[in-house]
Image (cartoon, rainbow, N blue to C red):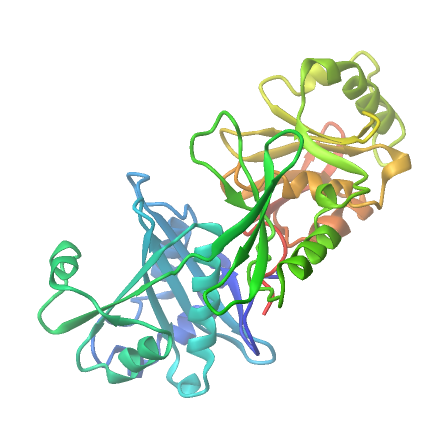
Length: 393
């Protein structure tokens, strides 16, 4: 599964119960526990814990508990990084690597990659970390990452022990010099200037009915440009709706789209060779009742594609693109548009006979979690743990 990529050798994958067996060997290294904690009691205990953590939220829902395993190509899993994202925009981070991989710069790469992800996707503005005073190796790593000693008030608030050090790092937000909205007001691209004088850009999305604000989609924020004009030109080459000749835009479906949606659904279903005979009396309105629908619409108002989702238990139910517009980025753009609307992970079911669709989802990081049989035939259940493309170096 494709995950978050760091500068050199490290890839971060959202931690799941499937990682337990390999991580049990990593976490059984006694040198890891020189200063605190103890190895997992058994493989089954670790697997059960990983299963619970797959919710990625605290029991009361107030905190996000994010965990990634660290993979080195050709070596396998070497450790983990984790973060507790709080409602105030701060995040407590932690990390652990097997001793055989200490001193190689892997921990620094992994933690730096996680912090970029937390800043871009979760809007974290303050990082905190706690370590035993005797663990000099860990505190030196934090210092190299820009952390400094935290104040006494925060030590008390976080319950830091006497034999522990607490370190913090504040994220300095770049100055936005231009913000461009799309026609629906649901997407925007910010061009910003950093403290060092370099420029960059990021695309965001919001749901007008959701008060949580804007969410980063593609995380272009690490790209560096010498001028504002260069950043804008690159943004136009990467973001479909921003380009002067953008072929389509993504928006929420409205009542006026009903006829086109029904026609698209009917045409795609009847033309699918991998489906059994299709009941012509079924309508899209019936099969998507209770779901939220988003559409890709061309400049002349023609419908290019659509996706419908069940928001309460994030599930992608229907994804269809008109034949004339396939392989033009429509399906990917529709899925990307769900970022910030649907909390991860997302699930969907794809017919086993639809090999083209299975390849499409695999390339975008969806993993197989189950198989089954329905009245339409054999299907594969897929899950996406991390939306959009990997973070660029």
